[in-house]
Structures are given as C-alpha cells and as structure tokens.
Image (cartoon, protein in one colour):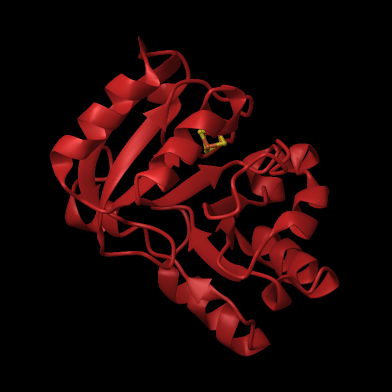
Length: 212
Ligand code: SF4
C-alpha cells in the first residue's frame, strides 16, 4: 500500500518537461517543512492504495509521462516498486524529491528532479550532498530562490560541485516573493549555466488551485 494524496492529469509546470501533458501521483507525507512550501495539504491527507489500483488509475488518463511527487515520495518504501512497475509498463517516469533522502534505490531509468534547499527554505541543513554523485545527465537539480542570498548560495554550490557537468540545473523563484526579471538579471550577470523555471501551472491557473 502507498498513501496517496492525489492523482491527476495536468500539464507539467516545472522541469525541462514543462508544458507537456503529465499524470501526477502525489504521495502523502514530508520530512521537511520549507518556509515557502506550496503543498502543505499533502503532509497528512491521503488514502491508502495498492500499486495495482494506482496503475489502473494512471492507465485511464492515456498519457505517457508520469511524475511521482509529494510531499516527499521517498518516505514510503513501496514507491520504489511503483517506479519499477511504471517503467516496466513503458511510462516515462519523473521523480520530484526534496533531496534529503538518498537516491541510491531509485531505478536508473527514472528522471530524478532533486531539490537543493537554499537558506531561505529553513531546511538547508537537511541537504544530502552525497546525492550529487548519484545523478545522471537526464536528471535535474532544482534550486528554489527566495532572495539574493539564496541565489548567491546556489551559484556558489553549482560552481563548487560543477553540477552543470552532471545534470541539468533549474532555478525557480518563490512565486510572488521574487520577480522573475530580477532573478534573470542575476543569472545573466553571472553567465550561470542554469535554466529559468517559471512554475507554468501557477501562471495558467490561480496560484492556490490544487489538483491542476
Ligand atoms: S520538501 Fe516539498 S513538500 Fe516538503 S516541505 Fe519542502 S516544499 Fe513542501
């Protein structure tokens, strides 16, 4: 069984797959409490579903791309079997994780999108930097930027660990807190090898709408 908060079809609002139709499987529970979290509704609420039930529900949507997200999906042990079963069925699978739990057991075909938590999140101490050694070229590292201090912290970590040599890098300003224009200016000034992420779903729908 896996505790599931919601399963729904939408367009991918983040990552290098932005704009593509995607099925989202949101798992309940998170071990972090980021100051700007926009999915606190997934901390506790959900219902237990078997992997077969989840696969049946996913199949109905008829879409090839699936994202497993949360909360923190790696908190539930059965998520590894779910990822394996989805891959076996031919889905392209993305995993969105907060970055505090080891990526060691994630199947290699899964596209890992791992956060590195900046100081503004309040969860910087939970980053598991060993995960950087487990990334493949198809994986993505995401920094959510609250302010200039977060940006500078991210820039320094990217350079120190040469993250752009192993994975794609996404920089995403906290919606309503930092202007895209401002962050783009910093990226261009530093010629930083990163991709700007806009959270497309919050532009299409109201920022507080869930299940879209
Ligand atoms: S890791 Fe994600 S779900 Fe958990 S508190 Fe942070 S932003 Fe929210």
